[in-house]
Length: 529
Image 1 (spheres, rainbow, N blue to C red):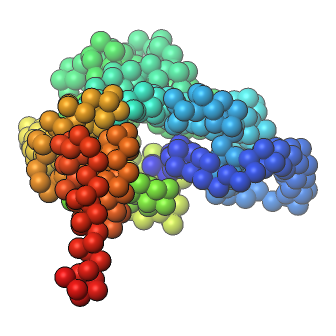
Image 2: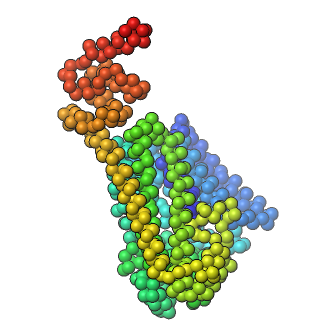
Image 3: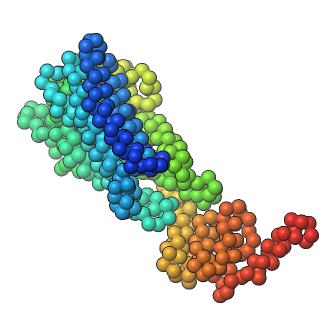
């Protein structure tokens, strides 16, 4: 479920958005924050756990874990907002790595705080945990999700930082162009990341390998082999598949699942994972991600060009934008994921049998906790297992050819949507590219180049605040203060006193023209003109 990543998403984007937003006395706050943190870790939290153990109370594991996780995240974000310790300690690095450096600090703090916090969490729930599980195992199990989450997020932030230097909208266009390569690389490297997060090992079971080979041939989905997923002595019945290239593509199965499922039920699980490959769900997820990026950039560029007064360029606007983006992502991605799960169920029931796969789902339903009732079905990445069993039992499967055709049509629809979005983006992107090139020419002091670019802009775009800003810079550099003031007035209040292109044409200051305009305006306002 997406919920297991939500606190990490909040940490990542909250760090980038709010770092330094409330900075007043950063050093003092950082010292106070460290002192209170020590008190919580050394005294308050252990005392609270001791009280709960003495009273014999064992709260809900899921709710308690969420409270622990969100408490750590919010505590780190408070420090970032009030002190921004990364930029405070390394201002030069903060200038070149405005996102990566604060995120590195947040990541280090998350790990440093999680270790003692999860030790107390382990003490609280030790009576219901596996006897073989140590506190180190418990902590490592909690770290699997951060290991999967942070490397790609950190890499993307580094790419964004290194792509800076241009106008912010043009930087977003360059990132859009880099996004497909990033996602392809991410999917190619996914097995390496999974192996690290789960400490996956090669299977030494020849029967399991033989079964995988038989099913992969039947499903027409080549895989390199089976990896045993280490759950660190936690009862997690799960499976996954990762890898774009057949040579580096693996099916991952937890040891716990192998221990409680019958061989036929394991076949059902493997068939379900192979179905995701055969039906191209990994590619569908990639197209979805690219379309979401294109839609986001199309909206932002359109707002920038046609409604610049509403362009989100502040902390509050960025936070609102993030919340809207996350809401749209959560609803749309979960809908796609549930659809893919139903398709994979149907595929698996065909290449095994409806009875075998239904019994697999029933066994799974008997050993896992249902999602919290507070989370509605439309926010779940997997449908409720009862619904999945009902569909399999009722024969809602169809032929493999029909499933493949439906999946292909879905991908074609996403590709077509992506092309439409690309066309919608191309116009605003060209305009922003010209403005960015003009900005670079102004920064380089190349007025001739800036003049050519300015003249190539359509008339409506010449009055855009970003264009006026660059023209104003030229006026200031030429010490044409009255013209600079006129441009500032036009930029701020949309009040035009003079043709801004004069900054490129006049060798001297156009004071006479400007003074005449001012006199004309004053006399008109007094009804004397």
